[in-house]
Image (cartoon, rainbow, N blue to C red):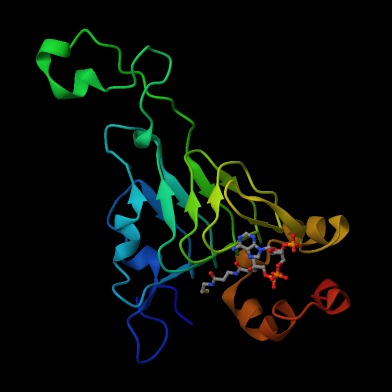
Length: 203
Ligand SMILES: CC(C)(COP(=O)(O)OP(=O)(O)OC[C@H]1O[C@@H](n2cnc3c(N)ncnc32)[C@H](O)[C@@H]1OP(=O)(O)O)[C@@H](O)C(=O)NCCC(=O)NCCS
């Protein structure tokens, strides 16, 4: 399996390995992370909202993430200043209003770990960090960081459950299977896709 393939599933263009179709340099995506969209897989970039080149923020997505149709990432450019008496962005609209303050709330980069599954139409708010192996339920609005291997859902997204016990989560975070040579991954997909802890510990 070549990560530089744009459409990895034979016979369809609704699924793409994202890194091969992204144009915006503020969006950084790891190998094998895919987006699925039956209308147009290029919609992904349109759903990264308010990502302006005059803002420093980046959307960083790890390897092997699975991103469903309509997932949205709201970036820092979305935030109007909130400390003044008005949130109206006067300065952006007219030179006559150039004395106005325009200090947006800045929450930093949005980072999505490795092997994260983002459900249909989920929304990720600015500056959120999502840990490796997390699952975001469909239609969630994620306003806070999500721990590795945690399942969250709802608006605002809350913990549904942890996928594994803490020792297993620590183990999975330590082995970082997503960085293994592809030959090792190829040879062991049946173990990676199983829940067999003894077997994965032997690798
Ligand atoms: C998050 C998810 C994986 C959970 O699956 P599950 O463990 O089988 O879920 P269950 O139906 O047993 O529900 C477990 C709990 O999560 C809640 N829950 C499930 N989906 C939810 C959602 N989208 N938003 C909020 N809460 C949700 C349930 O209400 C239930 O809550 P309770 O424990 O208080 O009763 C699944 O609901 C989901 O959203 N999958 C994403 C599907 C998708 O968008 N796929 C796109 C194509 S890849």
